[in-house]
Image 1 (spheres, rainbow, N blue to C red):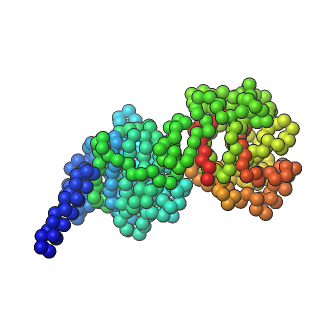
Image 2 (tube, one colour):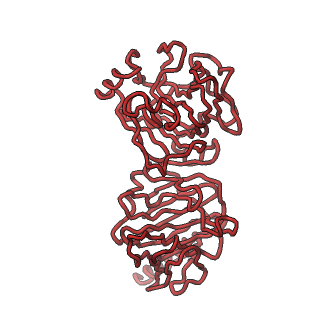
Length: 453
């Protein structure tokens, strides 16, 4: 009787595991013995099979190398285990391309980063040979801690379904990118090029490479991973689940009005191609700022902005319309939007507290590496987070550039020495309007979203 019970239990478990495996429909991309189904593009790094693993080895004087799947994949779930030498750099390409008419066949496309360094960007999303970094994991500190260094194995997972791209390292969510530039391409295992001062022979190993495709693949449930959404004025399912809503619908100024007015200004502001555009004037502040009809706080605000040469503008928050600014502009805390090179305001104020990303006239922004500063005419990503405990952060293109505590003694001292000293309670309201500034220069905005915390 006991034997029959355990035999039946064994059969039931076997059937359950078999049913689960059949439901997930994983396909192996590596037979453990050969490189069948793969081809090498780019550089001349060495790829070979050892002990049931693909081993990539760096060599000198060669560009980035890629072992590419012979098949292209559109929607998929991909998993691999990898073990990378400390100090080496690598990545997993997906939806990637190599075309004769693009930089002589150079491999380009999405890459899930492998970064065993103190920078800790493993799991971030890079656009190889095209747009550079799309998702820098600085905005997800929990995800940054998921990668295991010093020669340990790491499990990588990519979901690319429609325009939603999500990554996990060791089953910890790292990135959530919404993008629609490339919908299909090959998967590739990268061996990064090395510098003249680096010794060749560093290795990265891959094993258990598998993929799910087909109409029945299912994404993992939404989570709290911050989203970078590069599609125009849309909300992804994850953003909706996190409580975000659009402040600009892409079509008109519904939900906005002129500061200290009951309707939109008649001049300078227009919507074109899903973007808010502020047209130039004689350079003076004309009282044409616009504010949200609704007030917010605490919140997380995300937006994109594009500057023209020499332009000045700003995104203000906790705007208080009872403050008398002499009809010039709405008064509130300001995320400075500025061409630091060409506009004189960058050299005014104190120690750079009127430069791009700064808390205007109060706290200068921490300057990013030049590589991550967008050129004039390119879109920048801004983010302002106001936590319920009054901690405030400014983020610019994936980097935290300002952090302060609203209402602290330091904050009060900074206000007392600023142009805002005459406004009692400046920046300290429980709620306030969000404001886009007309400073007389041509600036554009899009993808303006907010959630209350």
